[in-house]
Image (cartoon, rainbow, N blue to C red; front, side, top):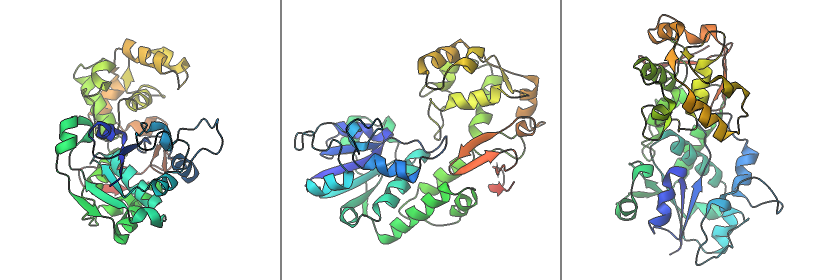
Amino acid sequence: MRRVILTSSSGVGLIHAHRAEMVVPLIFRFVSGPLPTSYHLDQYLNGRMYPRDPEVHWSDLVRRSSQTGLAHKNTWLVWFCEAYGVDRIELWFDPEPNSQLLLIWILDYLRSRPSMVERLRLRLVDFDLIGADVAELRDRSVREFDVTERDFEIAHIAWEAYRAPTPERCFGLLSRQFPKFPFLKPAMEELLAELPSPVTGLGATEARLLELIAKGHNRTKELFQPGGLLETRVFDQWEFGPLLEGLASGPMPAIAGLDPKLATLAPHDARGRNAAYRRSRLSLTEFGQAVLAGREDFRHHNPIRRWWGGTLLTNERLSRWDAQSRSLVAP
């Protein structure tokens, strides 16, 4: 039986676990920045339109197979599975929010590809793939299910909700039951918690960052590194920087001590920006202390323009999340 595993970047260890002939990691990050367009997402799973196409495609991230050689390169994923007689396509996505978003996206994509539907199996991965060693990934028992039309419908509803221009439909998902997707609602609530608080104007990770700095953790290395103090299930280490810069800039910054050279560096200058972060010695401003104490609202004094799924958050249209009542506060 020929098997292909579709997974998130957290599941790259499955490559060495010998549970399938091919492991395809899907690399998109849907939890920060604007969502890719439907066209861009489709092109990622399709073949290159011309040899020098600079865009990354699914086949660029797949190891050479002893059975297929390089035949998967530059081809459409669906076509490859059909041409090489793939019998089973397993979906391995763990509970963390970005992985759950990838799961509903790929199911929504595959629902209109009949030749793929009959091959699909959903694995209920109830542990973190990124922390599992090869032996665990190889030997651990992981329940599997057939994918039904109802499952495709749920994935479509959830994906369209996340892509919507307001978060109301995502909030509505919290009152529904998804038996085969037990991690979808917890992931969605973790994402909603990153909306600004109605009291402080901070998302959950932003508030955690201020708390840690207030306790004297002033170095970005101990805050940002994998397994560091700021580690959350929503953002990865590369997404903490923009959050920090947002809190350290504007008319009334909450954080002081960020290296001023960051303002002059290009967004793609990873080496320069990393060095500037490491040079920084962070502290809370007086305003930041007031925000942390709930006496000030950061968003009342500073501009906001950032994406939450398909929602563009601005000062004029600012949806908020009340963690205490677990409710969405409309603009």
